[in-house]
Length: 341
Image (tube, rainbow, N blue to C red; front, side, top):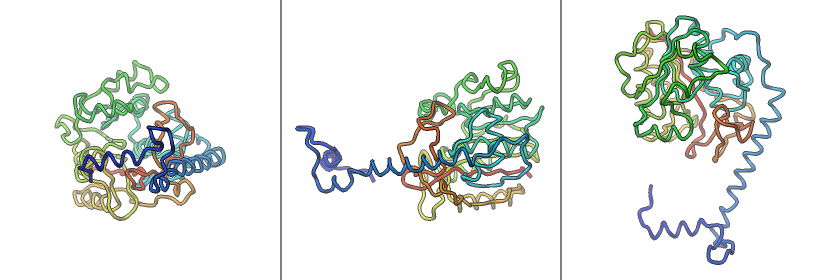
């Protein structure tokens, strides 16, 4: 709850200063002495987690297989075992990126593998991407002859500015073209861009073979609105089409964040979504809430966080960022895949 009294706010600001600005002496208030090393503790924890990731990388990351294996992933959370799997290694190689112990990187092979195992990565298929930002999936799909409508928020939307600052919003096709994946001519032939608010999917976006979103539904205003986006996305598909979404998962019982810029779904919300979809005649794949038991599954990264490795140069090649604290809640990425009935 925000502190209303300005005098109290000023006192807290002074309390949180590491030195006395008038003379440069250290802050010797007893409460400050209790918390002053918390930043160092966080840094130590982060370094230990990242060191584990470095030690595991060479021995545990799978070699790239010749072809993907037809295993169905179902609804699942990002885990260390997934990053070390053959399927993740294959799709990371296809995208030209190195597998890292990073939950955001996990989302890319998760989406592509689900599309492939359902026969959607093939010439003549039509795909619709929600909240695409600057992700590489449209370019990859275009290289396989798939027609893609990539969408993002209108440039004048209140939320768009914040996403642009972190390279997670696109206002032109140029930003999502990846020349190492597809020629410009082929990209232009297969990819188009529309501006779409996921809370109001236009009626003309219909008859697609598949649609997807990557960590977008937690940003539409509330948990319930995010669940409705998944349900409403099925209206864009043909019968038998596939929708794949990844989002934020608070895997601890108890309270969670709702009605906020980033909401955190929990097991109960995904179970409710599955019931709603099945009752509407759709097919939800096997559902798991296993968050893994590897050392990097038990490591919860703490802020401040580095940049996304596939957008800018990473500050650390092994961020070990499978689980993290979001506003104090232990979270990871979670994926859902649904076949339209």
